[in-house]
Image 1 (cartoon, rainbow over the protein chains, first blue to last red):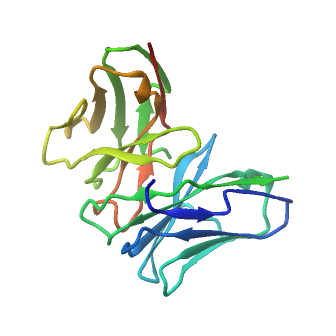
Image 2: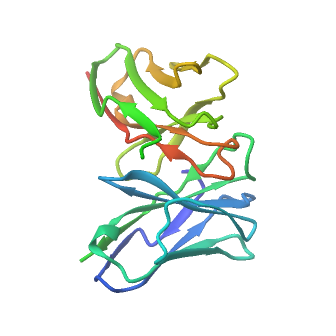
Length: 114
Length: 114
C-alpha cells in the first residue's frame, strides 16, 4: 500500500458527461501528479500540483482540469467525455519536487465511457 | 513522439534466469531514470532508479546499467522468480521527477516460468 488513495475505484459514464476523480496524497506529501494509462498511449503524465499551485503540464487535454485543495487532496475533472477517454487514471504523490523525489502511485480509477 | 523507447514488449524467462529489459531515450536533458513495477490491478511502484553520473546501480537482485553516450539504460533481474512476473516500465524525467512528471516507456510484460 503506497499510502495514496483514489476514489472511486471504477466509474462508468456516457459520452458528453463530466466526472471528477479524487486523490489523497501520502501524509506529508506536497506534490500531486496525475497520469493516464491506456493500451495505445501507455502511461502519460497529465499535470502536477505542488502545495496548491500548478507546477507542470503534460499531455492534458483542454477538456480536462485539475486542482489541489488546501488540505492537499486533488481532483481531476474530465468533461465532454469521449470514448477515447476510457483509461486508468493514476494519481501519484511525492514529498516535494525535483532532486529525484520518488513518486508513489495510488491504485487508480478505471474510467469507462460508453 | 515517443521520447523513451522500451523493448521487448513481452518477455518469458525461466525461473532462476536473468531478465533483461532495455530502454533508449532521446532527450539529453533527462537526468533521472527510474524503473517501475506494476502488478495487475495495482499502481506502478518504484523499483530502482539511477542518475546519469553513475554507470550502474544494484539493489538486491535488480541492477540498472546506464550508458550515457548511447542514451540507453537497462534493467537486469538476476535469479528471476515467479513473483517477479509483472509489467515493468522504464521512465525518465528532467529535474529529478519534480517539475515535469515522468515520461514512461510502453512497458514490458514479464513472465517468469516456474
